[in-house]
Length: 543
Image (cartoon, rainbow, N blue to C red):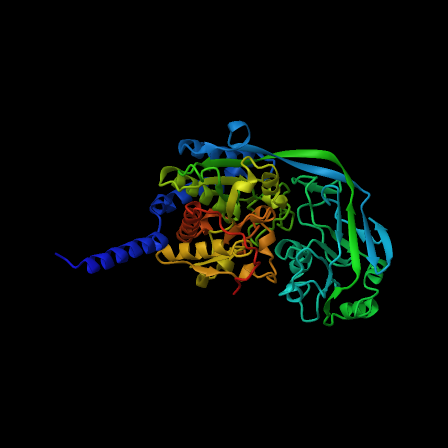
């Protein structure tokens, strides 16, 4: 008879080993994701037959039909409108008539500024609301370096400087300058932002200007938007009249691109009165493709891990080549030198790679082991026009948006950044730690389960990264609702938005491994007995 203590020790060791195995071993569903199918599907999605999958085109409709045909074959549940796979997305051109004002009280004196008279609101300022803030923070140039470590939650944040400090390459980092407002409100939870009127746009990136209208959007017009205003000298001189450094001196330093201080404005109160009347003058229709794989746990099946990619691209060049052999590109596109004969922007990597990755994930979850929580798959339309498909989905979600516990977004995962062979094992992660540090740790553990693991790079998660990727794809629509996200990409390359982004240049072995990482991350989140904790610590993982 064996020793009881020894048997007990062996049993504990076995239980511990099993727990570790469950944490570190790769999921069996990975075997259902294959290179052959990724290649087959992408060869159609990025073929000339689909004419570049431009929004509002027959080519995009063919792509949607192809995705739906496969979802039906795999018995994946439709989750669009009226029990179909399609959700109609309404992209609206809007005229705005603003009666908005800002009232500033400094000590016992107050002044009211009307929209267009000393202050300018974004045309898409959201629904009517009145917001009074008695905490106002002057944050130098409003850059991450000025805000890092500063608690601006619930405050109005003010900055100066169109070009940033002298050591700052304003031309190269223009996206950082235009993203100051979003960083303050979305990452650091400021309640409002105020910048000088010569500062590159502090308006939210949810909209763009359309012909014959003030803006184009797919988001709700009555949603609550943190005020983001630009102001002139009159406003700033009054607001900063009791500042520890006089406004004229602050302005001189900003114009000279010298260092600026940061400080709290004392005895200052700002009231934003948002009052805009909207008139929709045009509506264009496109479609998201939406599907669900139900979870197995009755207590969790009505919560979702969302997976997303955009399936639109830029279309084709309608103009003929000039006598010099150059061909005009479609909007946002460019022609690779020497490739003027190619008039179709196939978008194999952007985002054909994400489109078929999402198909592979849907099949693996539908035909393989199903996790406890349900899985939501959304192929977003109109990302290239301004993330309209995802913005529409989060405002008019076909499942309760507050039951989405995380969103994993895939855009451009089929190449090496800048075509460098040294990038062959690298994937870039953006946003993984900003809303939920637990989600960040989950995907790191998921990567360790792969054999071999990928090299995880967080360079693009840095708020000062010039590309500002966090704000530039569909994941940001979900993050703006407080949903933890991870964006998976392998980076930009010379064929980005060019007519040479073709299937022949895709690295399918690398693409397969990135899809496996997304799958493994999704499995772990879907099997958690709780939603990933939303601790909102902001971006910390950087290289």
